[in-house]
Length: 271
Image (cartoon, rainbow, N blue to C red; front, side):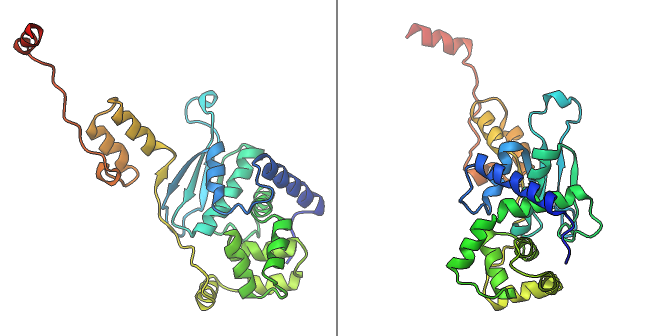
């Protein structure tokens, strides 16, 4: 296994990641699924099941009509892929949001870096550095007394950091804990074999959640309905985009309000 990025590039990406971990106040914290909350601070995020073979996600930096009015880029994450892959995709896209400001599409073979553009390799390295900080990685290795880097121990570390198996293998190579030949051997395992090893060693399967979430659309729709700004039918339409119904949120249709008649008004005034 060869590290496609030069040592200078690798150190530069490491500093980027450390800087961002510091600004997010996460320098001593395993990120894991917190990455979704961090991403939502910097982008409008859509989660949608695009299919297992579809791209892992994409980023749209510019707006469709008026770029000046777009305060945040749009990021889509494919919820048909396992959650650990969604975690990696989110961190990858954060690199493009923070450092490149250009549209990006993540292929379904994102972790296979052969023939990838340098910008994608840099984004992958940033995601690995951000999600699996070297100091924290060595700390967990010490806590769990890991002496040999077997498929079992690597799956254990991958589970702790909520990243894909292949990401953890590459991370161990990047921090000089395994050799190039060891990395190549570990990476030669098929996805099917890795899933079987997870079952064999009783590691939790971080399967796809197929969730649908369109930024804060649901929250805004419910707030608008409760304030009387949209009808119940409009609420139903907006919630349907996220495969929800008002009943799912314990929201009942309000009684329609009708103004009193002239006779009723006269009666009220006489009282």
